[in-house]
Amino acid sequence: MMLAQMSCTELSEWEQFYDVEYFQTDLIDTHFSCLSHHITDMVCKDHGLTPADFSLLNPQTRPEPDTETSDEAMMLAAEGITGGIRYGPGGG
Figure 1: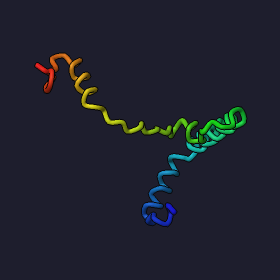
Figure 2 (figure 1 turned 30 degrees about the vertical axis):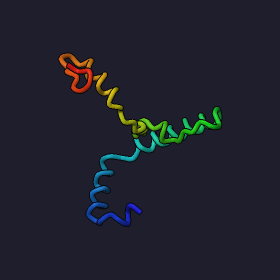
Figure 3 (figure 1 turned 60 degrees about the vertical axis):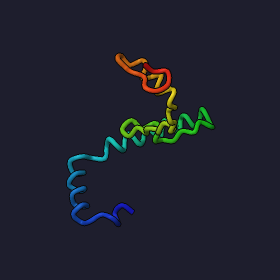
């Protein structure tokens, strides 16, 4: 799929790049992350991990759940700021 969308010039540039930068580090990382995943899979059957979770070169960042801060929580946080002034009910 990626090659179908790539121009000849871009393919040539990638070829020149990988003449200098080998796939070796990526390959070793993939082998060890798969090995770690297999060992974890033997010990713990229902772990919910993938080989990408064991990768050192391409760590997966999991997005934090979207939680909106309430107005009251933001007002309480603003009170703790030095020199902060609370605007609204109960403010000075």
